[in-house]
Every structure is written in C-alpha cells, then in structure tokens.
Image (cartoon, rainbow, N blue to C red; front, side, top):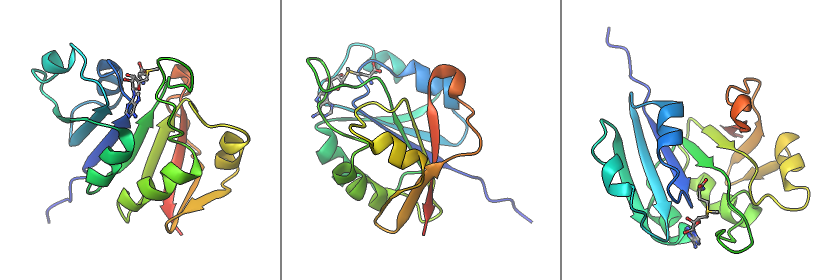
Length: 158
Ligand SMILES: C[S@@+](CC[C@H](N)C(=O)[O-])C[C@H]1O[C@@H](n2cnc3c(N)ncnc32)[C@H](O)[C@@H]1O
C-alpha cells in the first residue's frame, strides 16, 4: 500500500524580505511556498537558490489571491496600515471571503501574528466566529509557533 504524501502550499502575502523565517519554520519537505509582494526585494533571487519549492507573485495581494489554485496555509505577519504597511486587512472578512475559496477542501491553517486584524476581528477569529465560503476559522489546540508570537488557526470545511 502506498501512503499518500501530505503536500502543503503556503501562501504569504505582503512578505517583503521575510522569506527565510517561514522557510526555517516549515521546512522544505512537501511544501510549496507562494510569496507575494507588490515590490520585488533583493533577497528574492538568492532564496531561489535554496532547495525549496517556491514561487513569487510580484503583485497586489488581491490580484494574487485570484491567481491561486489551491492552498493549505496562509502565513501572514508584521504588516500594518501605516506607512510601509500594505494597508490590506488580510485577516478581515472581505479578504478572507475570497482567500478561503482557495483553500483545499480538506481545510488547512492560518498562522499569523494578527497583523491588520482590526476592531474585534482577532477575538472573533479566536472564538471561532468567522466563517466564509463554507469554511470556519477557529483557534487550533496546538499553538506550535507561539514562541515566535504566532497564533495558529484551523480552517475547516463546515
Ligand atoms: C510592513 S511590510 C511587512 C513585510 C513582511 N511581512 C515582514 O514581516 O517583514 C509590508 C509589505 O507589504 C507590501 N505591500 C504594500 N502594498 C501591497 C499590496 N497592495 N499587495 C501586496 N503587498 C503589498 C510592501 O511592499 C511591504 O513589503
């Protein structure tokens, strides 16, 4: 009997230069990284030399979501609304409505520091009160990346 390999596609919008951190966190086994930023940074080329499957979408994060086929994880951190930040509420309902349609039917995870989750959105996410496009988001029992200031949410088909 052949065991089905679990494959993960991780989408990181508004990544800037922050490539090595997620690669070190999640590794390179059966993972495809899709990094997105409206600007191209000078370390993008050097990371291509690593033994990692990755692609770059140099475009607006809203446009990038349209290009995604299927993802298993959203990684998102250290963004903001002021100068230098994208101003995109990636954890807000409007963005999630579209993003969740790109999640695998098997669901997946959102790993984030809670950037750009305004008002009570982060609390709603933690209490499992955010559902869109047939998926519900809830706090994961395993907060594996808490030491890095990251919250893990499960994305599950309703
Ligand atoms: C505050 S930086 C955070 C970068 C990265 N997350 C980190 O931890 O270092 C915000 C990034 O969002 C990018 N950005 C701005 N507007 C954007 C947009 N409309 N779509 C995608 N990225 C955008 C900027 O170029 C910048 O690299």
